[in-house]
Structures are given as C-alpha cells and as structure tokens.
Length: 266
Image (tube, rainbow, N blue to C red; front, side, top):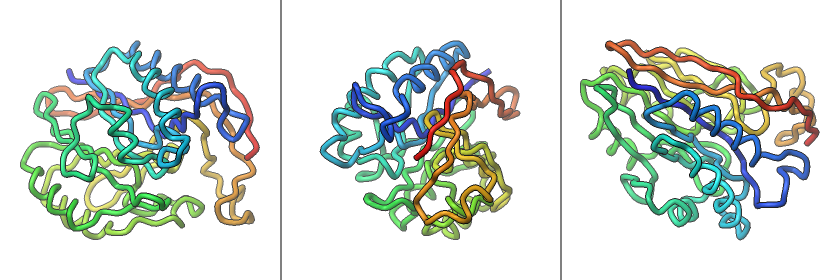
C-alpha cells in the first residue's frame, strides 16, 4: 500500500509572531507534522500557502520557520506554492526540492503505479489561480494512461463557497480539456480552508481543511461582509487528509490531529 498525506494552508509566520497577531500557525503545523509521522506515509504533499507573506521582505524569515518545522517529517516532502507564497523565495528556502517547468513549481512522480502530479496554479501577487498555456503544454506532456491524482493549490472550479469562489480561476476550461480522456481520480486542493468536494470534468475536486484557520462553509456568515474581510473564522480541531492506494483502489480519509480548540477574529 502507498500512503500520501496532504498538508495545506499553514500560513506560517516568522518566529515569535502570530498570524493576524492571534493564531500560532507554526505550532499548528508542528502538530500536523507529528500526526503525519504517526500515519507512516510514503509521501507528504503541502498544497500551498506554506507561509503568510512569502513574496515580501518578511518571506525568508517565515520560510525559515516553516522549513524547520517541515524538516521533522519522516517521509519525503513535496511542496507546491499558494497565493501567499513566492516562487523564488520557496526555491531559496527549500533547495532540495526538485520542480519541473520553470518558472513554475510542478512535479510528477510515480507511486506504485499511481501517477502523482503537482501543479503550480498561482498568479504571483494575486489571490486567484490560473492554468496558462505553458502549464497546459506541460501537463498534456506528462499525463498518460496511469491512474492519476493531481495536487494543486487552487480549485479550478467553483466550490459552492461564494466568498472564496469570487477570487476565481483563469483557465479552468483548459484544465478540464487537458485531463479529458485520462484516468484522473481526483484533484486535491487547498486554498478555501474548508473540507468540500464537487464533481467536475469527470472527476472529483476536493479541498482539504487548512492547518491554520478553518473557514466555515456556512456562507451566511460571510455574505454580508465586505470582500476580503472575514470576521468569524473558527480554529477547528485539526484534521489530516490522507490517500491510500492499494490494488488499484484510491481511498481518501481524514483523522484528527490533536490541537486545542481556539477562536480567531480577523
């Protein structure tokens, strides 16, 4: 059996600081690292927003903190960028990572017959995601007849969460066309900070809960708020998403990771 653990949206800040001055995201990521190790995975994939201010002058200190925590993983790690990350800063902070199709941070690997693809979906400096032509060409080249899971930060389609869906994804139709005819079992995403899945383009697009702040799927909490302002963001007990591949069957599960319940007001 092959096991893959997904981490996402850790939003780590510099040592001695808190996210939004209220949330110890570093300790929450450390809790998830310990829980991931207990699952004894073959691979851990972080689907982006590793840090909070990755492309800013604060980025290197944040990546230093994140790298120190992630070094505690006992399984190999693959990283993808989110909209809070910076590509150049990630390359500098994680020099051992091997990415394809520069300047994008992609990867493609085989895990016991399961094709695992990491797809960079960011537009640096913007919140929304994209699948540009250069990525179309790369993905079309690496896709084959193997069963496949694609990991990326942004869901390429609306997830039924208007607050997050409003940020958009440019090129979702191209991604749907590119994967058509291939055995893509799942697109595993982050970004929306909520456990939600939709059927799209003949497969399942599923987002995992963040290790930082969980955003409630109850849209009534956000519809009356100005865009970009969240005033209610509960920090739920952490849950860890993982994928088991055995005898041609992909199963997707989650387990609790021990962390105290807290509340944040942003």
